[in-house]
Length: 240
Image 1 (tube, rainbow, N blue to C red):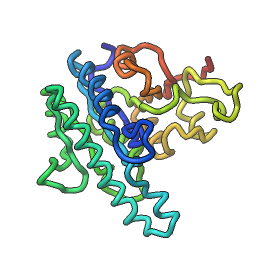
Image 2 (spheres, one colour; image 1 turned 90 degrees about the vertical axis):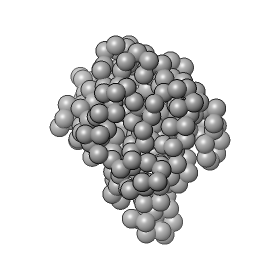
Image 3 (spheres, rainbow, N blue to C red; image 1 turned 120 degrees about the vertical axis):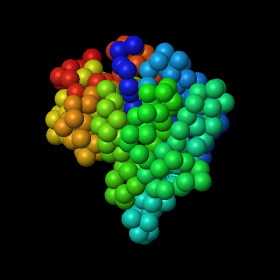
Image 4 (cartoon, rainbow, N blue to C red; image 1 turned 90 degrees about the horizontal axis):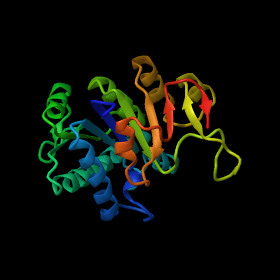
């Protein structure tokens, strides 16, 4: 394997499949199966999961809800997703721990950096829920922060597209996919790979980001093996 310890960023929308809302158990089982394949190779894997399939704080705030309150509700939604993914993994005999940035001691551990690293060293998957515990920060920023804290070598951002394009491929059929990008190019061209705070954190800590299509079976383990798929953020600018 190319990497020893990785962080996988999953959007909440990835868990709902073709549903308009909520969680598709089959999709979660498929994701868990791919993660289990990675764990069985000996690679340590941590996960940050979003909550957009259940509640989006920004959208609720735009509709008039207090932004901080809306963000806290969104954090709780991420814990629901984390617990669902934990159950799917443990049904495959993969030991898993959920750690939350907001105390929920009856259902999950509090986030403690040293404990998270120890779990990873013991071969357990660690799922980080409740974002960073602070409103006004996205789960993208949480992924960058947790990756830096646990000394992850790379962030895998699993999305619904096969990489980063120079234009919206749904609108412009001539849009070209980047093979690799610099952090600065992502920020200066507002490519929305992750939010600006997350990109800045990755740049400061020299953490590469690999963006790939989660729906393609086997892409997670291909990324761990170092195969060139999707788009690498943290290299030079190169278009396929």
